[in-house]
Amino acid sequence: MDFSRIRASEKMRELLWESLEGGHWHGRGPYTKEVERLLSERLNASVWMTTSCTHALELALRLCHLADGDEVILPSYAFPSVANAVLMANGTIRYAPIEPVTGCLDVDALPGLVTERTKAVLVVHYGGQSHQIRELATFCRQNHLFLIEDAAQAFGSTVDGRALGTFGDFSAISFHGTKNVGCGEGGALVIRQPDSQQREMIESYLEKGTNRLSFERQQVSHYEWTSLGSSLVPSDLLMALLYGGLQEFDENNALRKNIYERYVRYFQENSFSGLERFSGQIESETTHNAHLFWLVWKDAFLAQKFIDLMRERNIPCYPHFYPLHLSKMGKRFRLGHEDLWYEEQIKDTLVRLPLFSSMSQSEVDMVFVALEEVREDFYG
Image (cartoon, rainbow, N blue to C red; front, side):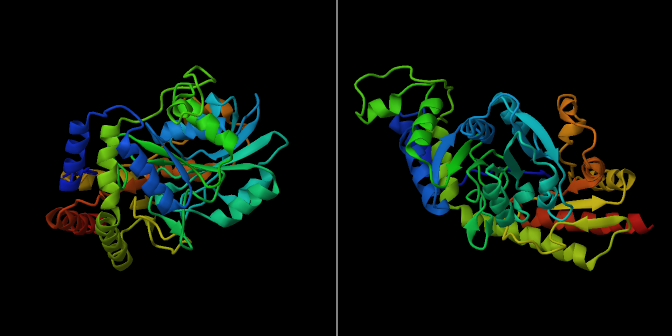
């Protein structure tokens, strides 16, 4: 069976065909505008669609106007896009530890990490969850730091009814094919209250450093090169797919949540020798989107044993991030005194189970049959 699978619904097929027939295949077409409108209403924020969450992060860091050597604090347990975005904006990386319950940045560690060069904190909402996000936002305001949310995995997650991705100054969301709703490749930059200067910079950067959008609105007489920029606008064909997926998101994600909750109940009711913790074991502040279900084992041997036994039964299970501070590129930014022991442990002990909205009942049953057999093997 699959670990993750994207499914094209009839609605998505219909909208894609309409987009094909409409002839607007490039960027900034009617479906891009509809997606931005829908997301803006859902998030109560301004939204710009991008070709990926990575590009949205890069643009968010540029909006921070970092000078050479300005520091950005971010978790080492993260995808390389967050670190690359900092470096491409002339910043310097400073690693922060995560806390074990959610896998998110440990807010309590921040006071000891901030220096006179710190300009921003970049938080990753791991698995669609958050950790003390209100406290983190307050800390950043009080210390005059930008807060950037990597909400790549968090679309549909909320805290006290407010969407993750709307607590900081900037955030980035992913609509990659592996996310809860996706279009293959795509992302969004989210800003709760952008000013006119930020809007102008975003529009120009998205459009290859030109004033094309102002020209289309007849606000200027010439279409010309006005600033540094790139080509970050997604094809309207992809936005047609995403528009269909977003219209069906709540219904489809409820199916995903049901599977997630079955996993939680199973591991609450059935013990595994050497299993230390699992998703949903401890209630968090987040009403989350069930993006991931993970297990953390006592050691690497047990984790690999579980993976191997599940794969023998055709159930794919995988670890996740390789800590940035241990990577070939990332180790050069380690100062040497950071307390990152937990990240070094879970790179070998965290295991993810299959989870996607279109899992059939027979596929879900296959997972639970395999879990029962593997559990017996653990105690055998």
